Image 1 (tube, rainbow, N blue to C red):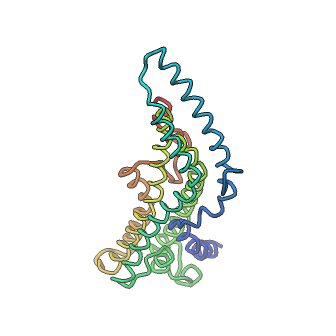
Image 2: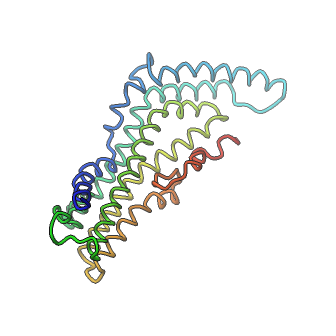
Image 3: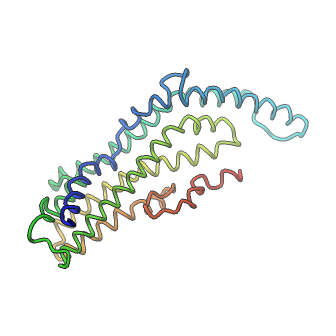
Length: 278
């Protein structure tokens, strides 16, 4: 039973793991009905309606500023900024697709570099097949109570846990794409611009993660090919651990929130940390 379970994990995980990690602009196509292809429905319609709310808010703030003598941007500056934000929010799907395309090409360059220079298929499917033969768990050589069997079992469950983490990232990316019009519109006011900064930081961090993972996979294949003095089982465990920690490394460099499976939901409020106080 355990052998069938592990074999099923290996056969199913690697088929969709690459698609989950290496996001392409196609991710936005299924969201078009929600975002809205024009200003007559969807999130875009709501944001276009909110433009009048921002105009009303600025008008009141401008009148009050004459009574309180507080500093406020000029009407010309606000109208110009609001006009740019309105144009951008109506093209939010195109903007998100463009950003995704940049990071997709960057990760593809890393993968193609490994294929061109070293002859490796730099992907999760290639890595899993290189670590664990396809029919290993169904063969007579598999034993859970041997060192190889224990390590390979741990690796299989490690890839399953990775897939759950990347599913979380995939879902959060879709959520960020959906709320992109709101984030862009928030730039029109200095009071709400923190929302766009938080959205942009998290969006870029999640996209950059796939470039970082591609680099880790490339290094994994190079180490496997060159550093034969390392015990292969220990090296493979190190590979899995590095992939687990990739999100933490990106957070240290760029910021953003975690997609680790052990991430506490109580920390979810820190996604837009500092926005409410501004």
